[in-house]
Length: 138
Image (cartoon, rainbow, N blue to C red; front, side, top):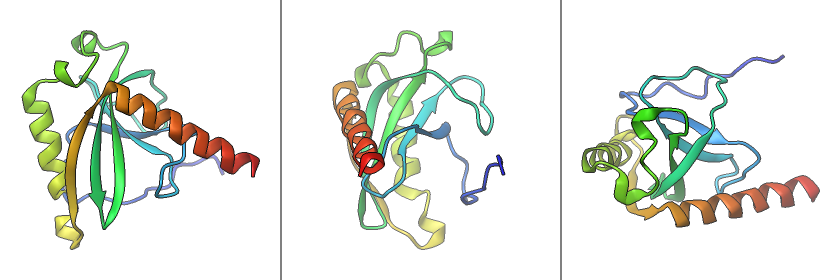
């Protein structure tokens, strides 16, 4: 039908833009999650060019989950951010707090295990692209 289906409404405010990386497949059977740091919100269906700068490795409802943290390549506010070390501590703290608590009102447990640098994020993206290709070919 060429429309977007609402996945769910969160019980809390999301501190960044959120989407997925096309033609990837993560362990949960969905495309790889992407957190986009950008000064102005985008819109449903918006395709952006983004640079991976980190990965949040977490547990979501007893399953491992990755959230690739990216920055917009066209937003001058984030043009200098290339890695985890470049992210402001406040952004790391806010996203960690959010992901540790965002499903609590639904009775689900989430836990941020660790933050990983851009190299780890890129490796996960490459792996998830391989998973997608394997599924498409198989």
